[in-house]
Structures are given as C-alpha cells and as structure tokens.
Image 1 (spheres, rainbow, N blue to C red):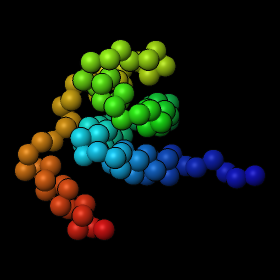
Image 2 (image 1 turned 90 degrees about the vertical axis):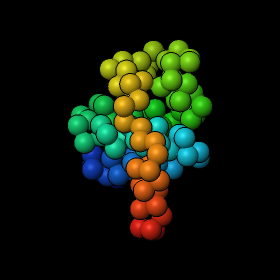
Image 3 (image 1 turned 60 degrees about the vertical axis):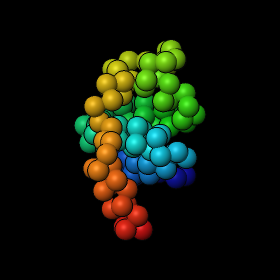
Length: 105
C-alpha cells in the first residue's frame, strides 16, 4: 500500500499544475494565486485548490472574473481571494518571471 503524499509533495505538484495550464492568461491567474497564497494554506485549503485544478481553465477564469457563478463546492473564502485579482502581475515583472522560468529549464 502506498503512503499518502506529504503536504509538501502535494504543494509542489499543485504549483506545477498551476503554472502549466495551457494558456499564459490561465498560468498567470492560477499560478499567481498559488504563489501568493499557497504558503499559508492548511491541508483543507490545499485540497480545495487541488479540486480547482481539476476544473477547466475557462470556468476557473470566469469564476475569478465574476462572469459566471461559482459552483457551491468551490464557493467560499478562497474563491473570494481569487476574485480580488491582486496577485496577478502584468507588465515587466510578469515578463521577467517568464524569462526566469525559461532560463531555469
């Protein structure tokens, strides 16, 4: 029987999935949210984010932008934080981050 992954392993997997969504817009929104808040998350908050990662990017972005209703299972304090959008970096800082990620590969 396999042991459950540690919270650190789950965070690492979630970070990768958050920053590799399929579109740059989703990467910045979902990855930026992860980078801003993940270090503060409890196990249940991380589980919420893992569930969010299973959803389609178009839906997640619509919920974050408040253009579609959030499903009850995902509604709450964390989606409200995501809807603030204060974690999304646009402009030179975002370009520098992307360049840094490319250089580290």
